[in-house]
Amino acid sequence: MTTVAAYAAPAAKAPLERTTIERRAVGEFDVLIDIKFAGICHSDIHQAQEGWGEAIFPMVPGHEIAGVVSEVGPGVTKFQVGDRVGVGCMVDSCRECDNCEAGLEQYCTRGMVGTYNALDKNGEPTYGGYSQKIVVDENYVVRIPDGLSLDVAAPLLCAGITLYSPLKRWNAGPGKKVAILGMGGLGHMGVKIAHALGAEVTVLSQSLRKKDDGLRLGADHYYATSDPKTFEELRGTFDLIVSTVSAPLDFNAYLTLLKTRGALVNVGAPEEPVSLNLFSVIGGGKTLAGSMIGGIAETQEMLDFCAEHGIGAEIELIEASEINTAYERVISSDVRYRFVIDTATI
Image 1: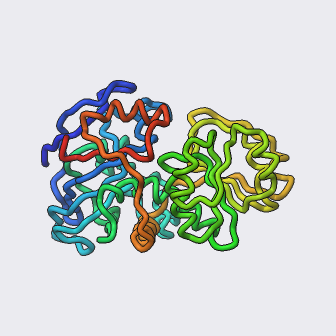
Image 2: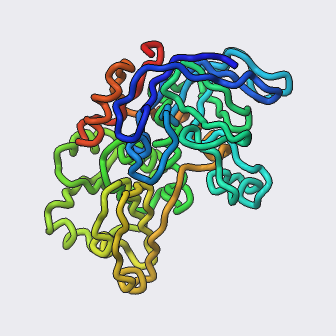
């Protein structure tokens, strides 16, 4: 066991505070990672505030982890000391179900083990990346290519793969019109990745406040959803819309923007149920779908793709003492576009 410094929420909705946690001893197939940077994802806030249901406290959030390997177990074959690595939203799964065998560990039928706010196979709570070290089985660690700086790579471990996976699955690429709904921590990655894949990219945002950023990051078009004319002008336009919004939407309105047989895929997860008139999907043979992160192999594929295309997150680097302020700013959409914690300040 190793004692490490961390920032934890002691209870639901409580401010995060500096503390220490115990990391398990490095096992045969484990990798000990010195965490260098940890991204702040909106889902950290949802869970720390129990917006998605009952949670485990004290909670050390963080599933956008970038660091350097400092020790490996005797059975480890994939990594060695000094390697630049990342850990995303999961640190284990059953490894035996059809989904795990298909490289879809995120949909493990027995339930993947979250990087935090979960119980590992020994029934111990998992603690995430707002800490200085983490021990993870090598099968749930990915390599960060040399072309990516660790600070801008950290958010790729959740925000990057969360957008890459549906864009690839629904064949975003040349000849396809793709809309990214929401221009935040997830959305800005969607713009960069969809552009790199060769799609014609439109941002749909509440206002035009971030239009210059959207165009700079690769969008071809930018529309305000607060303007009713947007829905008239763009009716029947898109092959694919990826919604990154974590607030309830008028899905019936957004489904009108799809072409026949188009898809609206949700990666944002509102805390409240949403309503839908099924004729919105029946008319036009449209798909309303969801997607959650990606498997380990696809996450590695995403990192390699981002390195090849020079894609990192747009970040605001903060000290650990600023985490609570950062949470408030994320809630009020006051970040461009991802807070990343310099874990040396923990």
